[in-house]
Amino acid sequence: MIWIPVIGLVLGVFIGLSFNLSVPLQYSSYLSIAVLAALDTVFGGIRASLEKHFDSSVFISGFFFNTLLAALLAFIGVQLGVDLYLAAVFAFGVRLFNNIATIRRLMVTRSRKQGEKTL
Image 1: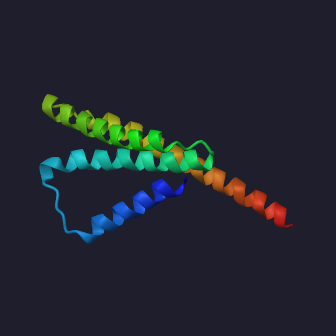
Image 2 (image 1 turned 45 degrees about the horizontal axis):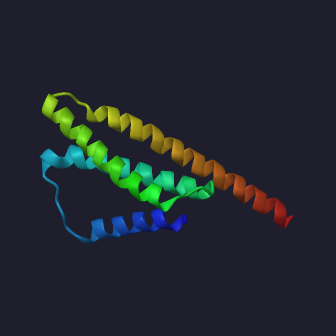
């Protein structure tokens, strides 16, 4: 199941690079926070897969919910004149780096175990 988030990430990057799309400046903060939330969900899915408790329905619903919630927070912040998106950037940024650190630890542990088996 680890392949679902990885394939989605690779496909999204490929599509994004294939088409020459430009985002208007007024929407750039919404898009940036939505991309950060989406990346957090993708790396959370990879982590869950490595920990053997990946659920595709949780991944899909979390992907859309987190992305929409982050964009909504940015929109509400702009309407209020408050940099509310910074809270989402902080929260998703911390989660993203935690997920990446856990993925790295899991992969190092697995490679060590495989190395011990071959000896």
